[in-house]
Length: 478
Image 1: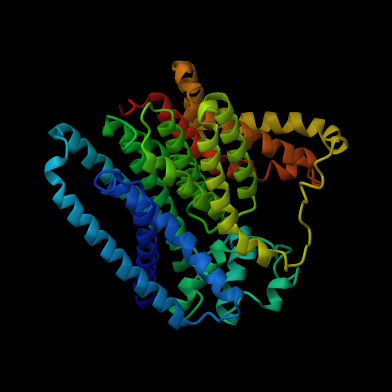
Image 2: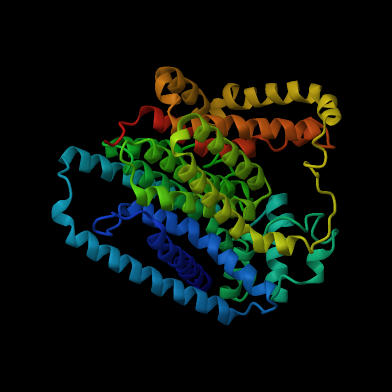
């Protein structure tokens, strides 16, 4: 019982630290300086940023040679709790002051919101319970991430010889540390290794992704009912929950899906706002910044984040050239802000990573050659067929999002070529192309490389598919 209380308090502290950052970063009204975001967006982004910055804090602390101690984790938890309570109190006072300015809402709409909220609460609670029903038991969560978190906890440092030994770390010394550092934070609070309680971060990141999705959509449409519906569509994608390799496990694919979806949300919001006749300057400035933070956290979670970041940059650049040539300089500066923010977040990790030994890494960039691609033509056809089967022929098992995406595309083709929607299409096509190319140039057989990772990869980009569907069918805000 004591461990459970400490884990819940620790999670609340992580959440609180994220709430402080989210309150500072979210768009505000240029006239009154009041927040334009809603409570769902604040709470969701607070969870997402909380786990990201907790890991970044521990990384920087360890890089300068300081040791991890229970006292450090208690201080971080206490500061987070205090900051979170203060942020929510300030937000409550602002909401109370502006209560008379809120638009009238019908009783039927309020009842519908309560129904949706009840469903989301049920999903959140059952996801937490299901996650806690088992300790870490899959290969990746134990050998790649769980083992590192135990060493970090026991040795109180990230600069330990065990983390450099290829056999000890299962030939994964260069895997990012966001998950191990967060797990070590909970171990320090409990004073012992308990890989069941430490899995709390995974369902909470699921909750953070869902709430952030709801918040961004709610301020992007005239009808909040639609925002709730599409949020429920995201929350019930089977490959995320209840598939055991999704947010129920301690693997990196759920967190990657969370951070990548949040990055897409704010880039989508940025382009959608930029396309308005009178764009909101606060959204234009702050959305690329938040997207850059989320993209950096994706990279700090798993190496696939690098490919996602490059695809984001390419898709943003193409959309800018097609639609915003008259505002090329200002838009390019926003893209630069996105890229620079991502670079700042991942710079400490890449510096630390450069000191780690190379083992069996795929070295994709060095293998990106014409001859290698030519040799992988047969792998190309196999990978396309395999992905098509997973996305469409096995939809009953992994989710209908890909079928619905095609339907939404042909239902409103005119909407699909708007900047924010075209960005998502290019992003999805780019990430799928990256996966196929990786299978073509990898030194391992494509059946092993793509066949073993395709379902988890599709999980990571499903949030982008749901966002595209929502963008096709929501009534846009005037």
